[in-house]
Length: 75
Image (cartoon, rainbow, N blue to C red; front, side, top):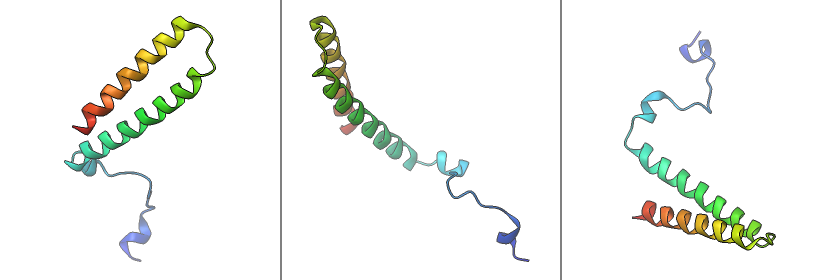
């Protein structure tokens, strides 16, 4: 029996050694960037449905803050 046959492999799991690698920061930044882009898109779509002007201002401020974070990630 081969060694691979004895172990059930979880192809989705990432080994702990990869998490400590240098490339992890790039992947984390890319994932964070994608998450921010998705949030910005969702907030902009939601912004069109809001009638309360004070809430619109708050949402615009959040969008501006997230866009600033995106620029920081790109640098």
